[in-house]
Amino acid sequence: MQQLGAADISLTAGIGMCVVLLGAAIALAVRTWRLRRGTTVIAAPTAEDGPQRAQPSPAEPVSWRLSLGVLIVVVATAQVVHHAWPFYALDMFSYVPTSGSRLIVLQADGTAREPKRFVDYRCDPMPTEYSLPAPGVCGTWTSIEVHDRASFFWILRHHGQPPPGAAQPLLLARRIERFDAEGGRERVDCPISRCVAREAE
Amino acid sequence: MSTARATSPWAGRSRTVQRATVALLAANEIHFWLDARAISQLSQPGWSSPALYRWIADTPVALGILAGLGWLGCLGLLTNRAALASGVLTLAAMHLLGEAVFGTMATFPPRSFLIGLLLAGWTLGCWLERRAPVWRRGALPEALAFAAFAGGYVCAGLAKLLRGGLHWDHRPIWHVIACSAPVDEGRGVAAVSAAFAETPELAAAAAGLTMVAQLAMVAAPFGRRLRIGLGLGIGAVHMMMWVVGGLYEYTAVVVALAFCLPAGAQGREAVAAVRAPAVEALGKRLAIGAAVVLALAAVLRADAFFATRAAYPLHIWQPWTHSADQPPARAPLTPQERDLLRPLVEGARYRGYTLERAQHREDDVVELAWRDPNGGQIETRLGRPDPFTGIRGIEGEGPPVELVRYLVDRVPPKPRFRWPPADVR
Image 1 (cartoon, each protein chain N blue to C red):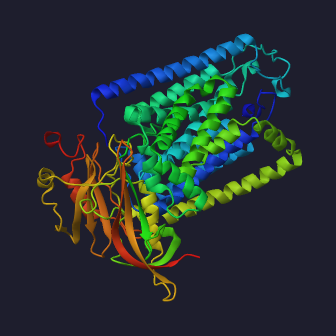
Image 2 (cartoon, each protein chain N blue to C red):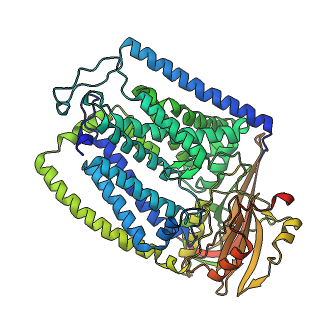
Image 3 (cartoon, each protein chain N blue to C red):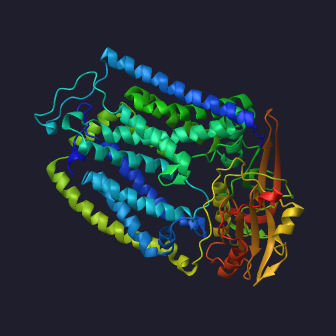
């Protein structure tokens, strides 16, 4: 990952705050303009409101101040606590990655397929953890863990003995793609295990 | 508790669609939390959290009761009975359940929090509406639910801006494509995905659009038209990520449709029109019956999922997220770090467990992979930023308590422990 310097961070934070404040200011201005024009429709009285309900004024603010307050409280609380349901800073995809990877199976002709397209896996060696292969073999890499887990546990749950006529040789591999800021990219298929499996119907 | 039954003052239309959306999303989330145990294996919750959460995570009956209460609250929301009490009940149950269950998951599902915010905003709106004078009662549940939901997206946008900032370019989209876009999808989807993967400018535009759409949600409270535009914009971003990167997220699309679309007014009217008294009475009986069945199912289901947990009383894991400045990368340990870990070196054995691999998961996390006596693999983690050790085994096997205890002895739980220690960083 490209490292951010202190100057970058402060500049970015400054720009971010400006963007947020500018957005809020524009929205506020639009809101005020609409209220002055009297185009904001508040409500028609309903039967449950009873006779004491006053006729709404066209310029009556309904709930935008309250809504804005709730939004600010949500954002501020999330920054403070980071995660405490239902608050969360939602920063899981906030970094700038330099690689991405996933588990695939390669058919004999080199075609990449999703592991979930096959069942009755028999692998040698049987993969024991989604994080394979170890760093150093194929360098460092990143992944979206939930996808890795789904593929890995699919293979574990569908291990078996494919019928001889339907068995296909497969190579379980981690497909790693590395990319840089200039738009360059490199793809490596890092082998994990040799398997035979049957294509799912 | 009849206040929340009041129709929306926006032309007096029913809020059935929005209420049903909140209730069904929350109910589905509870189901997901229980179901996620199937893939999250045997990780132990152990945040530096109150013992209550740890007790809940270890007690199948408690999990089942909480899920049942949460579903009961959802049912109340859905059927518009005691809306405020139902909202509070669902929030409380989901908070306890979520805090206990997230400790067992590999990552936080962001959707869970957005739905929580939606529910919290709705409940707050119901409460405030009860307190407000009649003439001021507005569409508070709808407005506050969407405002809280929008707040979640502003958080996401801010995080991207502050962490990625000036370097936020094509790489986040390429990362998603590399990690999750199906490799053998149909020709149409593959062509779209390939176009983004081969054109940095296109990917950078998509990444920028995502951040801007999230940040722009700050304007959501300022008007219905803005809300419509922003909600649909966020929904469109999620649809784009689904097509381009295979990253499927439905919540924002559903919320945008229910809370933002002008067409929703017609839908609300249509739903309200079929609510005849006889239908309501029948619905009430069905709802009570369904609540009982759901509560029982929750207890049974939770018991099945969590039955193995009671045997593993140690909780020293903190839920791990991709929230660090660094992406989760694996890298070899430095010689200095290896010295610190001794005698934990590859090949070391402890009570039948063999350390197979020691590596960095992130800069400040060390991942230890162990082979257990039965040939299964166990993973432990050290560091970041509070003390924790993650224990995960292959499905169906239990985490080795003795190994956990051994590691606990090595990793002092207090004070805050960082790996590696500051003097060697």
